[in-house]
Each structure stands twice: as C-alpha cells, then as structure tokens.
Amino acid sequence: DAGVTQSPTHLIKTRGQQVTLRCSPKSGHDTVSWYQQALGQGPQFIFQYYEEEERQRGNFPDRFSGHQFPNYSSELNVNALLLGDSALYLCASSGGGGPEAFFGQGTRLTVV
Amino acid sequence: GENVEQHPSTLSVQEGDSAVIKCTYSDSASNYFPWYKQELGKRPQLIIDIRSNVGEKKDQRIAVTLNKTAKHFSLHITETQPEDSAVYFCAAKTGGFKTIFGAGTRLFVKA
Image 1 (cartoon, each protein chain N blue to C red):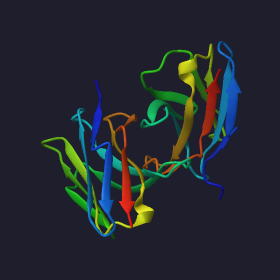
Image 2 (tube, each protein chain N blue to C red):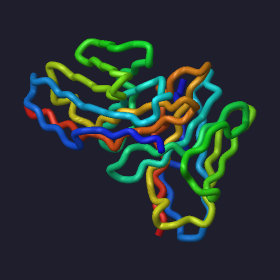
Image 3 (cartoon, rainbow over the protein chains, first blue to last red):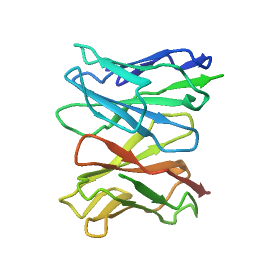
C-alpha cells in the first residue's frame, strides 16, 4: 500500500495561470481533504470531498475548486494564480469517518 | 470564527526533560483533537489524538489532556530525545468536517 500519493511534487507557474494538483487516497479510504500550508504556518483547510461531492469548504475563494472521481482520487484546481498562492498543498485521506491519519507528501507550488 | 491558538511558537528543552505544548479552540462543537508532528520537508504525521468524551490519553512518552470547559488541550512529551525535534501542530475538528490547525510549535531538543 503506497499510502496517500500526490502529484506533481513540485510545480512552478506564472501569475494568472491555472494549475491542477492530484491526490490518490490510501487504499480503502473514501474521503479526501485538501490543505494549503504556507511557509512557517499550519495547514489551512480548503475543502473535503466525499462521495464525489464537496461536503465542506474552508475560507478560500471560488478560484479554488476540486473534484473527486469514482475511484476516490481527487483533484484540486486553482485558477487565476496569485503570488500568494505559493505554498505546500497537502491532501489527507480518511475512511469510515475515521481520523485524517494519512497525509500525502504534498505538492510545492511556486507562483512567479 | 473558528480558531485554534497554539503556544509556544518555539520551545527548546534539554534531552531528557519534558515538553508541554498548549492549545485553545473557539468552536465549542469541536469533538476531535489530533496532534501532528512534521519534520522538515516531510508530511505531517498523526502522533496522538483525543475525542471530546475523554479527558486524557497516553501513548508511551506522549500524552494529551483535554479540558472541554476551558476549551484547552495540551501535548506532553516526557524524556525528550533529539529525534523529537520537529514542528508540532495541534488541531480541532469542528462540529462538521473541517479541521482547524494551530500555527505550530517548533521543538528543539538539545543533546
């Protein structure tokens, strides 16, 4: 079991561009949450996906959107990138209402 | 709004001493309180958690306490070792599905 995997690991984009990040949950997990972690700060909750629906959202603008596929994998899309979107993006998976014990290694996004 | 405050931001202890990190939360509907350890350049790892119906939980050198009335919870690490050096995050799961993280405590254990 590979645990939670994310791709890509690093990404550099230009202001105004769009980006898609991907997450595969741990085997047997059906819930994926996405977080943004700025340098030196704690992870900030973006949203959570369950049964292919966004079931809760944090305080992030509509430029941040997501999707969950029937195999429970998930994508995070960010449109009209700003310099302030530069951060480590983490996904965490859980199953059966259990804790978010498993995080992916993250995608380091740099916006220039 | 929902908030988790964490103190101290930096903690330096001598090997073998104890370390205590404290957090407070604002949403009284919070019902689950995990603690994560994040080493430099690595993913957060869940090290211990506690639910709102429990006051204390221990796992070897790590313990967590919860005071629901005061909306406080704390992490206690005894007999610290150099490999305990990392950033520690407390978090609170709100009445819904959102998990709010504290800002983190950078722990240094000096050999």
